[in-house]
Picture 1: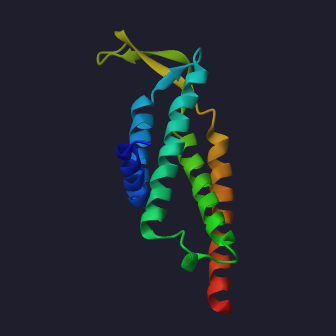
Picture 2: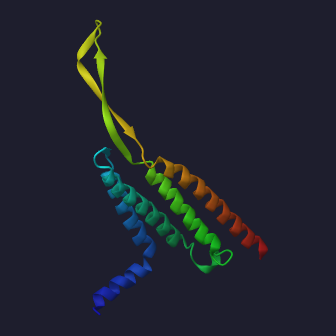
Length: 163
C-alpha cells in the first residue's frame, strides 16, 4: 500500500472528531443550500436536503462527542447502554430538526390588492399554499429523543452512584 494513503488514514484516525465535524458542516451547508420550496410535481426531490441535513447534524454532534471524549471507557454506563441511548437520542433530535425544514407547495392563491381610493388595484398577489409532509417526524423525533435522553441520563447517574 502507498505510504501517502497510510499517512492520510493515520491523520484521519488521530483527528477523527475534527474530520467528522468538518464533514457534518459540509453536509449541513449542502442541505441548507438545497432547501427550497418544491412544487407538488417533484416531492421526491425533497428527500435530498432532508437526508443531507439529517446526516450533517449527526456528523457534527457525533464528531463533537468524539472530540470531547464521550466514547472512552470512563464515560460508559451499564456496559455502554447509556452512551448508545445518548447517541440514539441525538439521532432522533436530528430527525426532528431536518423534518421540519421540508415544505411542498400544492398550489397558488391569487389575492387582489385593494387600492387606496377604493376598488381593486390592477396588481395581484400570488400566495403559495404549502404543506410540510414530514411534520409528523418532528413530534416523533422530539418525543423519542427526549425519552432516550432521559433514559441515558438515568443510566449514567445510576452507574455513577452505584460505584
